[in-house]
Length: 293
Image 1 (cartoon, rainbow, N blue to C red):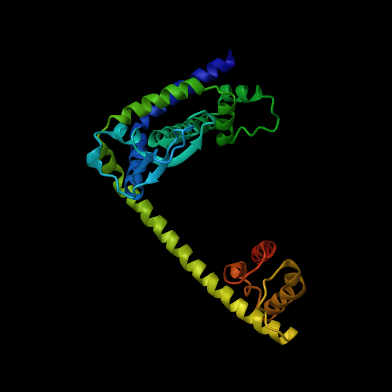
Image 2 (cartoon, rainbow, N blue to C red; image 1 turned 180 degrees about the vertical axis):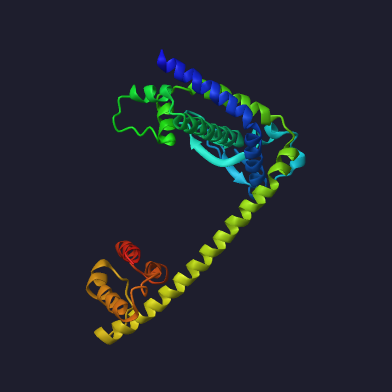
């Protein structure tokens, strides 16, 4: 009885919050759509190479930008364009299913609803809700943290308390945006999507420059290794570095170099496997050596 009251309370509060934050949902969908339009390309399913026993087809990226003039509303887009994900069906004749953007809209909607559910739980925690406490006590989990809203949301899903309600609510929310003008939604999310793209490109450029520096550092390390190797063993280093060679000769040289040039000298040593032939085991050892620095 108490559990049903708690469930009804959650459903009422969630319904109210969905209505209260409906504009945020529309904006979330708009940002998502605009980002796709600005970054993705059209794809089609080709059945040209299908064997007689399977009609799955394969996705082909046309490398064509989306044209908003091709769609009346969001439904036209999500129902007819592919997101690039293909999954096995384990069914005869149709071994693969190619996801359209409807799948992504469903996931996006569920993620948004989960955020609203977490807001409801946070409020109940702040109010020291008796119903919430009693429900958690009924779980018989002594270590359960009542102050952790994300954990409570996870448990609610595990118990499937709100499954039917969330499914119906998801359908209602999607129905709201599916028949909206796609140009309206795109314009609403365009600036946010452009900002996201700018941030991503800035981050990628920083990572690219960081990788270049690490590669240059690895080349410097390799040059010093070769010189030390020649000096110490009287021969050139011109063979693949396997684990035995690494442990017996290369690692001692690296340790000597670190002692001379400082603890930061080996920063980037993991990139040696990109510029010199090493075994897989040595590549892993170099990666671990870099992490230890």
